[in-house]
Image (cartoon, rainbow, N blue to C red; front, side):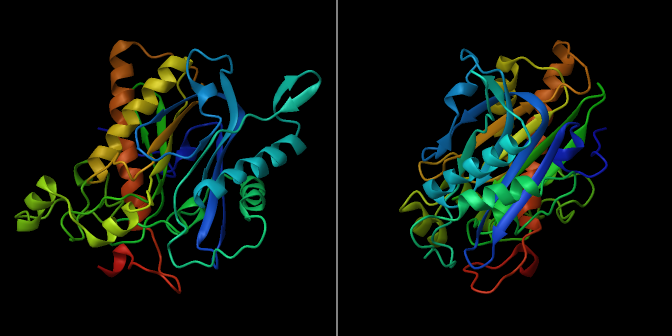
Length: 339
């Protein structure tokens, strides 16, 4: 039987720390995952409207094999500045790839769209995301907040506030896997407007309410599966105004190609937790990190368990992000706990 790590956070994977920074007036923020030592990394993008930085170098055929941090940010394309702030913080610590006598921190990033969420985006000449990225890097720790925090501070889903979620799973092989997600999808994470999460079969304990599936299934559930129509989602989708961006991580020893396969498998968690997902209006993306801290190289059977756990753990992280969201002044949508 699978069980969570001690924190049920991505930081149960040895060698990782997470930092959040947000601006309540802006209704936006930044989350960064800092690697204590460079980690093997990969990425898979399946959404139709991605916004990214330094993702090409993560492809298995390219030369950089390990990175120093990843960034998840609000702010649409403006939020890509957050990686510069994280990069600055890591450079101050002497972290980075040595190139011609200089150290260059490698910090891939992805953004979600949270501009139309009721926050004040009148920031003047330059957006605040570089400073928020620096602040998030300085705050990186083993424990961190979920829900309305970091990159999830201004996130929305279909009719509910989104948020930042995380989860972990400890496998029989001795390997730990963890997920982190900034949940801002076009689709819904709950069944036909109920309190029940689509990801209910993967829940461990009552980590997002323990409600299971509704019984009997509401009449509206079948209609939604066949033809999704939601006025809130339609408004957001007009401008590609969504995206769930995430990180899947493990302490197993993986090649760069295997890390990409891990990112691909973690997208199964999107499918299990959000309906619909990977739409033209979403920039859905998963970064994968392998710290190798366990020293375990997986055989074929254990590798299949790892990839299966990637999807299940991601589904749980997504649900926990919405479950943990808290209300704030000026919100457009209610939080799950008020439903």
